[in-house]
Length: 167
Image 1 (spheres, rainbow, N blue to C red):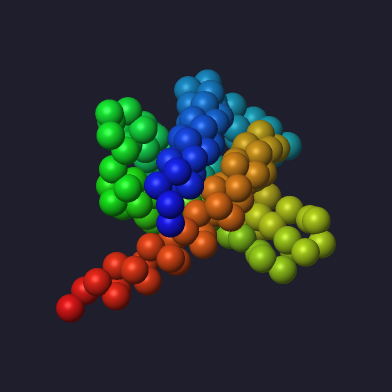
Image 2 (cartoon, rainbow, N blue to C red; image 1 turned 90 degrees about the vertical axis):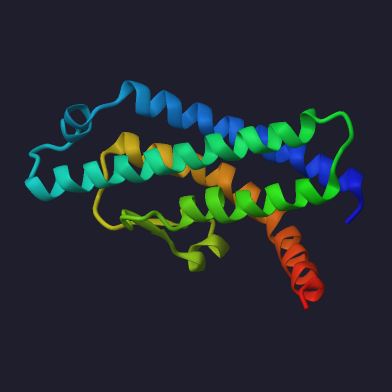
């Protein structure tokens, strides 16, 4: 892949990760478990545990996105663009950030790809989340859909080249 295309991709990834970080930081810094469980008419212990698991997953995602943002910023800050380093960073971002979003550790939601053709939300929640959590995830899904779409072909191409280079 040409270096200019990789550099443009790095700029787009940096912008999308910044957007994701801002949304996650705003939510995590100003939202607490009691506030979220207060959105339910009556809170059960199962709902409270679900909210706690959800927030744990969001914290993991936030750390992954912040790290990815720092790495891609480093790629773009260097005086001479290093194509090999940029490819490795973009691959790391797919495996850490994008996969962390679509496959949360506590499985509080999952993607149902069948709905992408019907223009419905592709995220299916394990339990009914508080409205603010639902809204956050649906908003983040737009960011991560764009990242995945742009990096999917690139990641496949990169993985194939790495395998062909291995003895």
